[in-house]
Length: 297
Picture 1 (spheres, rainbow, N blue to C red):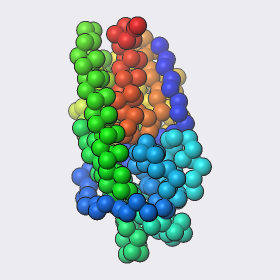
Picture 2 (cartoon, one colour; picture 1 turned 180 degrees about the vertical axis):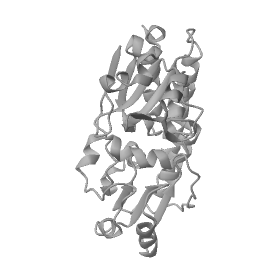
Picture 3 (cartoon, helix red, strand yellow; picture 1 turned 90 degrees about the vertical axis):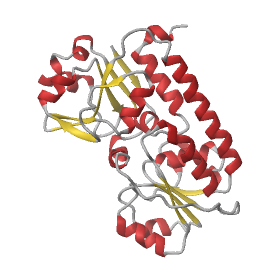
Picture 4 (cartoon, one colour; picture 1 turned 60 degrees about the vertical axis):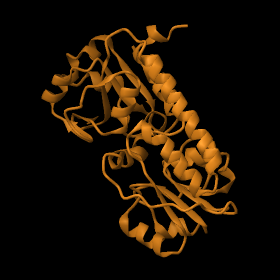
């Protein structure tokens, strides 16, 4: 069975930040910003989403290309891809605050931004659902909206707890899920442990079929066969998007349980892997696709 849930994000804009999530990053200690900050450059789709969720979108002067939700964020001036920022482009927006997800770059551009005198705050992005509340609090503190961020953080934690309780009631065996980021030279680029994909699969009550690797790695045919996925999960849309037809024509996947049932799920990348305010609902949606009987009214 084929499922699709598109919200318009691109795979290219997410790939490198997702790899960055697997790395240990230095976190800048943020001091509360004055509430009269009016020109924020937001770098990172989840940071932008949080600012919108806090109702402070009018203070955003510009965003990066991964900021695709909500849709109106795409109407803001674009300072480029999160890992390929131009310091001059960012500073041309006359920001009085720059908030960036950890892993933004390149390093020389970040060095110029730090030297510019404009406050630059780095927000931690570990691939863990338990860290979402801290991410929200960090952004809230940075823009002087700590109280609103605390409320949102508690709502997200409550949503995660509710999902955990729902998943615990599922009686059928856990599904083995292979997250395929892309195809390269006929090989599947899969998500292993310590990735956002691994975390969302766990939240949804599935088992990551590629936990033998760490991070996002190309798998050999032998590794794909050994993974024996029952479901193939991909990001919907973008140049790197893999279709069901492309997946199941691969010799390594042809004999998989997923191929036999055509179990293929496509979801918007930022929604699925952003680990932000929408994560409880995204994981619930994925769980409902994996275990439709458990979610019937």
